Length: 393
Image (cartoon, rainbow, N blue to C red; front, side, top):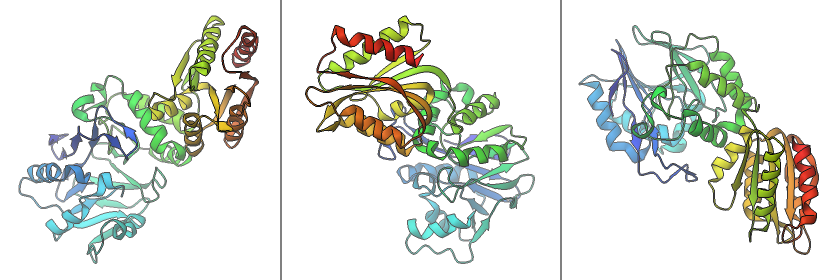
């Protein structure tokens, strides 16, 4: 797809509607966009490439947009392969072109392209470096660990464009979800799932980047995934401020349940019923065994409180819950109240393991009582569930 963003800037990215798993782990029912841009000024700059899966389409888009001109620069904001797979081809296709990237990105080139010839063909940029193209001038801003160490973003004052790398990205092909943010019916849903599962561990670096870019007169954000953002930028930035500070976006209780034969799920559903009867504004229950793990991670970060309900298994905890809590550990889950329901037919162990895993996370308050179910919920278990509900509210 080639699209004119203004008289000198073209979109040359590609939609991937056949991808089953992004990063071989995240389901993408609406596909994925690999965004790339071209600035046609006195000097011509390619802004990132694309994934190898879309090699032929991207090359065709580039040639169409160039319309016979030769590029002077290839700007590499991020070395992850879904954005950098065609770097070597560009260098061979355009022998006079200079590759512009952070020193760390240039160092990484040999890791991805064995024997790549870059002598005399690179320009290392750092915080505050500028690249003159004519009317357009790129100012580079360091964004290490958002979410790789070599990442830079760039700002073009001529049209107020922030080329934000993976920041402000989302799942979904543009042909499915809309080319601009205003065309996207629910940008926040898939942007949130993308953020917490891919970038979320690095809230500190994201906040540092937001502090730097907050001083710029940004009129449009051009990420490497997802729609271009132009209208109501404050709404997108406000969400990123909430997400990167691990603050609460939605007041409510997310109940994550891993049940083997249904007994634990019955207790989780009963707790939800009690919470709603007591006036809880929002209660969401998810079956960890049958739902998208990335959505469960997203919902845990989104809500103000979490309840984990799981069966005991092999003297530990049922594996879907272990996987869920492990993902929360590595993604930096913190600053939440958490309730626990365990089930065990002869030697309940799930509660102990869940407590141990939660104890490794920062500023997690375990809400008492921990409720223990023996095989099936009974009338005698309701008072404990009621007490837990009251403690959560």
